[in-house]
Image (cartoon, protein in one colour):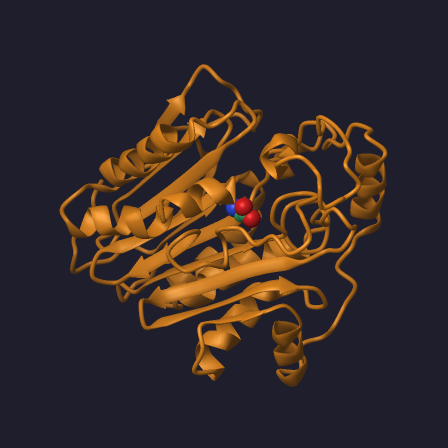
Amino acid sequence: MSPEPDQPTPLILSTWSFSARGCRAAFPSLAAGGSALDAVCGVARDAEADPTIDSVGFGGLPDATGKMTLDAAVMIAPERCGAVCAVARHLFVTDLARKVMERTAHVMLAGEGADAFADVMDMPSTDLLSPAAAQAWQRWRLGEPVGRPVDAGPASGQLFASPPDACHGHPTMRHPEERETPHDTVGVLAIDRSGALAGACSTSGLPFKLAGRVGDSPIIGHGLYVDPEAGCAVATGTGEMVMGVNGSFLAVECMRRGATPSEAVHEVLSRIERRFRPQSHQQVGLIVLSRTGLWSAGALRTGFIVSCASARGTEMLPPQFVMHPDEAVEGPHPVGAGGNA
Ligand code: GLY
C-alpha cells in the first residue's frame, strides 16, 4: 500500500536483523510525531552498544593491528550531513556524526581530530575493543577460524567465514579483498509524520582491515545519501564496491530521474555486478526509500535482511531483489517480502 504524498506514514528501515530491536524501540516516538533523525540515530545507537554485534560499535572486530576504529554518518539533506571516520576512543559515533552536522561548519572529521571533537562535546571516552573481539583477532592472526557461533540467534545478520590465511597486518599482505569476510554495517532510513527523511549508518568496517582503511559508510553519497527532493538510500556490505559506483547517491539520483525504488536498487546492484564481478564471499545490501514512503531493498546474495518498523509492527524481511538467489548467505528466516515499490 502506498501512502499519499501529503500523508506521510512513519517508517523505519534498517539493515540486518540485529537492528530490529532498535527499530522496535524507536518507532513509538516516531509514530507520535518524533523526528526521523532522532529515530535513525536511536537505531544506530542501539547497535553500537550491543557487544554481540561484531561489525558495529563495541563488539566490532578490529583492524589487522588489533586496533578498533569506528565510522559513521548521518544525513537529512545535501546541505545537512555529518560524518566521522577512524574514531578510536568513542563509542557513539552516530551521535558524534550528528554533532559534526549540528555543531560545526564541516561535514567530516577523521581520526584523532574526531576523537578530540568528541572530548570537547563531553562524550565519554572508552575502550572500544571487546574481550571477544580481542580473542577473535588473536585467532585471526594465528590463521585460526574466526566465526560467529551458528546459534547466534536473531542477532545474527550474516556469518563470518574464516580468512584464507593470516598476514599479521603486514603492509606487503595480499590484496585485502582476498581475505575479506562478510560484514554488516547498520544502515537506517526513516520518514516521519512531517514527511522528513533521515539516514544514518555506523560500522567498525571490514574485519581485520588494513590500518587506516575507511569504507563507504562515513562517506556521503557512498554508504548513505538523503535528498528530500528525491529520497534516500543506505548500503551495507563490501564498502569498496559501493564506493566504486557511488552506490547510495546513484540510487537517489535514479529516483530523481523517475526510477522507482526497486528500479534504483536494481541499477546500483547491476552496476556493481558488471564492474566488480563480486566473489562469492562478497555481499552488498541496499535499502532505498522514496520521498513519498515507497521503498525497496536488494542484495547481491541471499541472507540480507531488512528490519522494518511501521504501524504494522516490526518485521524482518528479505529484500525484494537478490542478484544471485541461489547463492546463500546465512540469515534468519524471512517472514514476508520487503518493499512496497
Ligand atoms: N560497508 C562498510 C564498510 O565497508 O566499511
